[in-house]
Length: 197
Image (cartoon, rainbow, N blue to C red; front, side):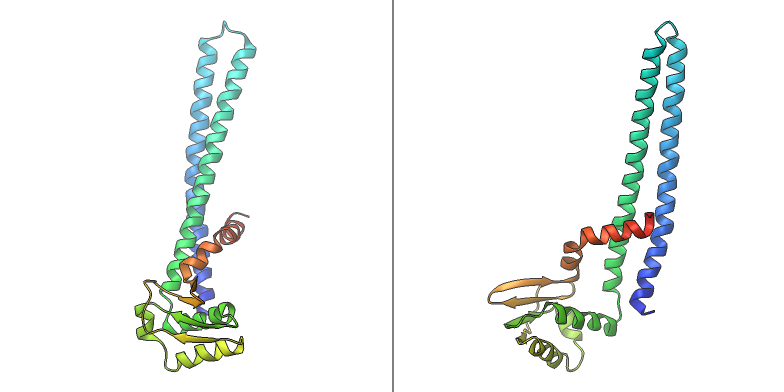
């Protein structure tokens, strides 16, 4: 198991525990609401005994339905908070990778996003300072495999991580945040399945 897989596994385990805790809290709160609503309905039934049984039962059913809706809303909200938390932790783990793992991921991203054209590549100021020896040649080799070329720009872009590719004046944002955002729905679905299936 690679370091990244271990990090992801640890994040998922922590998220499961956090999800269970939040869901338990949401369930307790929802159960309390249902219990209070039932008590209120029972009290009203006693007070309004002269009213018809049917209208009282309908009122009780509406209160129960409303309480159940609140319960489901609370549980959904707790799940969404947990999923957002897992996504942020996963993103944060990318920023704390050691340099070897970080640039291994950058190489894979280059292999995926490089086009068969001439272009430029920009990194953050921090990444420009810590580029591994010979990395500029690796970038050129990866681009050449795709039938293109990339020129490493010494001017940094105001990005946190990843890189920006520029082909014919058109920028392709390959930062981790941009990739997370484009895959957000897919990632949320996977996390939901992993935690709540």
